[in-house]
Length: 177
Image (cartoon, rainbow, N blue to C red):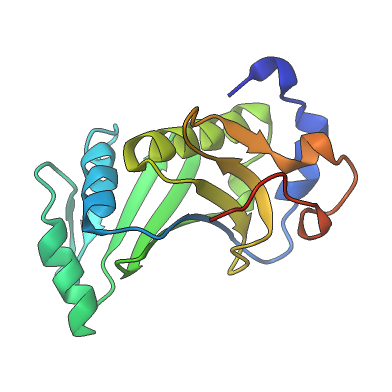
């Protein structure tokens, strides 16, 4: 993330709470993407927790992604992963193999430090998955607040180029996915 270009005053309105959560998406994923992301998550401190329907357990390597994906495909369960990054709390959901989703409460983003922490998490996810990571409003995959994408994996905050324009009306400089 380029801190010289980061202006919290332009980004802050995107985190005003309106009753909805924010979503981080990685689209067009495979089991290999899931494995790379879960292996990365297992290195975070404090250790994320995994819930596969039998209670919570630490997410430690090697992560049994094949087993988790078979739970999804069977329709029995959508496993979840709870992550704490300083003051940010995220929940990752395994709804389908083709998409990785994390939910973030916008009330956790109270200033530039938290926004940069969320941006760093996006950069890390993009780096390990080799896929774009999109931060959007809840269930609006195309309304990008921020995007981390290959090959540089740096975060592009859409508000910096189009100040004062609500994120759902901003033009995109490139395809999201």
